Length: 427
Image (cartoon, rainbow, N blue to C red; front, side, top):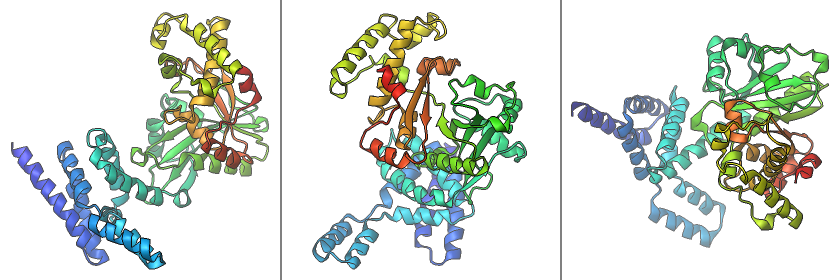
């Protein structure tokens, strides 16, 4: 009871601080009020945070009557003055409030934490979506890649930073310091984006393997006992892991710029590199299989439709659920050739035709929308528990041909997937 009373007092103080901050005159007053607001917010519990977001979402919207008037004025006058007035009227006061919070010493970090928390409430509180949209809009501007700094992570980087790389690796877990040290040897690279307002805090990082050719399985790339390759053998750069470190930046595009910046830097440092591609997981594949591997007939030619039916029938002959199949001992290294052919064909169709859809495979969507080519699907490429569960051990090479990425990005925006002859042969 007492704790709730104290929380209500803190919540009232936070609400009052938002109004004072928005009405503050002068830079010094605004900054001091922003510091107070941050302090009040950081002492709110989960329930009070939700109430605070309700306050942001209901009290700082544009005035509907003024919006209508401004829109009518622009529709009749159609000049720069009326257009500017319309922009100023429709912008929620909430955006200026967030800008003022951002001016505080810890403002940027606080807004990132706020949005991370806000995202967890969206399903239960859809009314918070406008506040989330404002945060996303502002963060997209503040974290524009033009403002970001690209740095290589090395074994000599600060220990605190290296610990964050271990903690945030989300694709292929780093098994302690020995594993990390191997991933930072001369035939491996790790690059991260940083923001000037968040020193020492990586936003997103990519791990790269420098190898003679296109890698077909992940084990050789992350084996901490593997011998270090000779620089004269480096012909291909394999992007094998991309990890986001800031949940508050969800939806803010950073990864595509990171890959391109890293590729350019690698070319500058090692002109011998000729190939840039990924070795990527397929996190949505077995979920699609469990749903019956649906495929609209109008997306396929008659021959492809018949082959899809044959592959689906072969796959469905065993246990219908992927988890049950694994429990029964299925493994790609022991799978019959018919299973292999069926799964490779289904995977090719899944990536080619389902990726452009709203719920298409997230990793495929990222690379294909980034202008990469669906180059090769590899069997028994990831034999880890996670790899078998989410993709049956399959992995994909997405090829980045730097002179084609813009054209292929545009093609994917029109729902066209660019793929190699090798992939075409699978279907």
